[in-house]
Image 1: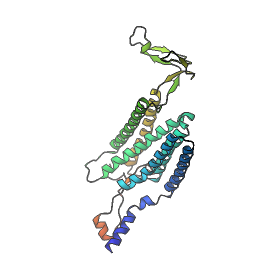
Image 2: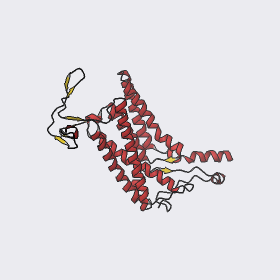
Image 3: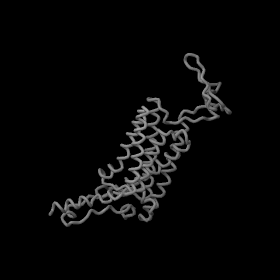
Image 4: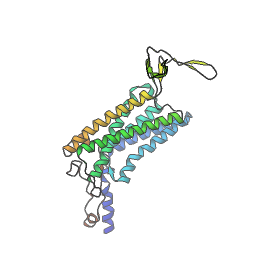
Length: 294
C-alpha cells in the first residue's frame, strides 16, 4: 500500500506539465517542419543548415527538460512563444534568409528576446523571493529593476557572442548597414578631434593588396555592425522595460494581472514526507502576489 501511494503521488506531481495539449501540438508541428527541412538540406548537401536543424531540435527539448529538472511550470503561452522564437530565429531567420529578406525580422526577435528574458528574470527573483530557505525579500519595484537588468545583461552577452563570431570565425551575425553619411575624426586634416562630415555617399571602392579595385555597388557606405548592435540593444531595452512595468503592477496588485501570469514560470514543490504519509497532493507555490513577494 505505501508504495502505491508514493507512485500515485509521483504521477500527480507533474500533472501540470503533462496536460499541455496546445504546447504539444505546436511542438509536433514545428518539430515535423524542422525534420523535413533537415532532410531537404541533407539531400541538397548543405550540411551547415543540417547542423542548424539539429541544433533547433535540441533547443526545442530544453523547455520541457528545464521544467522537470528545476521543478518549475512554464505557462503554456510562454512555452509556445519560446518554441516559435527558436523556429523563427534558426529556421526562418538563418535557413530561409528572413534576416536579409525582411529588414525588421531581426528587430522583432530582439524585442521579443528582451520581453521574454525580463519575464524569466522576474520569475527567478520571484521564486527566490518566496523561498523560505533564502533570505531575499525584494519589493515589487526592485523585482522589476532586477528583471530589467537580467534581460539587458542577456542582450549584451549575446551581442558579445555575435561580435566574437564575426571577428574570429568571419561570420556576419552583426548585420552590416548601408548608410550615406559618415562623421569621423580620422579624416581631420589637422589630425585633431574635429569630426569631418561626408554626405551623399553613393559607393565605396575597395583597393586590395594586389592593387585590384572592387566597387561595392551597395549605394552607400558599408557600416560594419555597430548600427545593428545598437539597434538590437535598444529594442531589447524596450522589451525589457515593457515586461518590467507589467511585472511590477502584477506583483503590486497581488497577482491579479492575468496577462503577466501567462509569461511568469512558477515553482512547483515536490510532495513532502507528511503529504506522502497522509495521501495528500503537492501544493503549487503561491502566486507572485503573496505577502512575501511584496
